[in-house]
Length: 596
Image 1 (tube, rainbow, N blue to C red):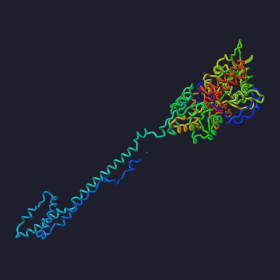
Image 2: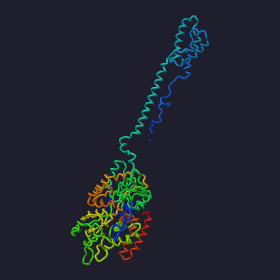
Image 3: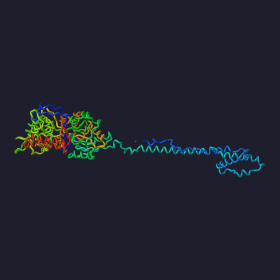
Image 4: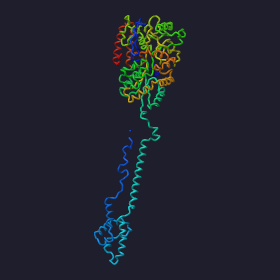
């Protein structure tokens, strides 16, 4: 329950609460006589496509052309011996050809032998010396035509080394580039956010300020990387604000809603994934009323973060003075008797101190909750206000209305429509007994009222209690539904509910009353919440909850129910008024898609 500021629309109770087999009304007392009880259901690497043997990686190898090989071979084979040279012109021609080729490769400082020089050689008498010169020249020409391979050999190696070095540098550059692309710098690491932490959930709340929610959301972010942006909204017109925002796809991811609003929200609420909350797990985790109100067609539509209802507040000073502090009323008759004894009048007969605030609609805050509680206890079927009868034919709803109004009738009334509101009266110390939800304690404690709380009175044989609490749901238009449900699961865990409670207690009297039966012991340790722990199992709900400001199912139904009370106070027939109101309420239920 977000803590509710004074006047919070805290009390709207949703659908019909969980209660199994109420039993027969004939076995218990009625507000009129005997009451009939209704049954209550309960990304790839840059190297992946890189080919190390791709052509051009190392370059093409330097090789002799076919023509070069042929020329070199021919030069060797056609160089004539001295005998052949002097006596065989064809070979001479071939030799000249080879020599010409070889000459081209000789150094410019080398002596060149031209064809003309050959044709003007020394006469025969110089043959012997000539032969020696020819041998030397032929050796030189042979060397020219067949230069040692080592002249070109170093070039090829040099070329290969250059290519290899270039390829190595290229490869190294690519590796460095890849590392730079895949390994962020320290600054990039700190700025980079994991994919999951890029999710930011928007949460609309009501009662808790951001300071209360921050530690819880910080813990969630530390565990999941998911950020939560909390926005506190005003209570008035909140239901319409949420509905319209979601319809326009501008709403939150997560939002608070009253347990009685489920029919009106319709498709605005997402269904919980089975691995977050299945119906079976949900039923074992929370009190029965939550399962009745928040599970629709075997789909969990929301998660309660609190449980609350209707409590009986009492002024300790007034009761101590009257000797009743240790004799708190447990049934309606005892309450009525004490209320008369505690009521004080002035000389004009006007009430100065009231015993209990009951009987009217204009100045009894939460009157519709009180009357609806009486309906449940008296065995009224809420969808059959005009036709719920006891064994003697008495209309059970009419009996409850008559009992409620009798506190302002007769010669010795304990309440009056002329008085300030019941909240103001109790806050000022002039009201002994006050009905309201637990959050009303915040204002009373702040203003120094010496008060206590106890359970509401009962009709013997019936344990019905009135529920009024708030849940949290995921918007159907959210882009982060999975993450949103993770948050709700997280928030509903005992250790996080306790953290929520402790943080809320820093700004008010106490935190949200725990919605889990396995945390009942925690509630019982708190003097203000002990009654809630005792009544939580028997909570029932219906859309007669005040201060939800929903301008819909609750507010409109309450208006028609109020007409019945006014009819009785005005002396008009209750049966006709009740029948008319029941018909109008059924139309409201139809308009807002409520199914009993």
